[in-house]
Figure 1 (tube, rainbow, N blue to C red):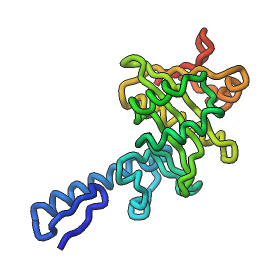
Figure 2: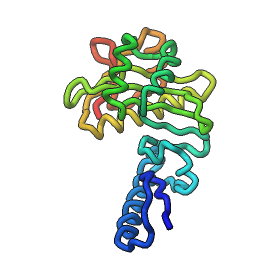
Figure 3: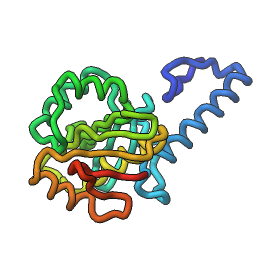
Length: 209
């Protein structure tokens, strides 16, 4: 008899006692990972891991957070299929524009810094893309959210998740250049007056994380 491990996509013979013990250990680690990453915005949040395993993103390790109340989740870039999603948001990008080929380069070379927000029905509603320009310096090159959703909340969440991801890989200074004065004012409202944020002489938002 064989049982399917939902986290590894392979088969384990449950007559092998040693193999099962090791498998249970891996499952416990996987559950622990989901507990830590499923809702980083609320450290006391208790996720339903059984229900959560319905998401392919969880099994692939791509999920960043899942908001059950608002029925939304965020995951990192997974494949070239996501490039179509990025193209949809080009006209909504709040950041100074890069050529399409450059944005594609950022997403494919720093997939952990390309975070996409979805509804629970897998409709993309927001996107943020970053890059690591130097060992301790990063840049946010793309930030866009669908108008028909709680845009301010999604902007703040994507920005927070992006800064957390950048900090995890050693980045301590993050730059974001607004597209124009109108987007600068909107971003100022979304970013707020946090002490770790200021506008430098080049008109860029600068974060120290």
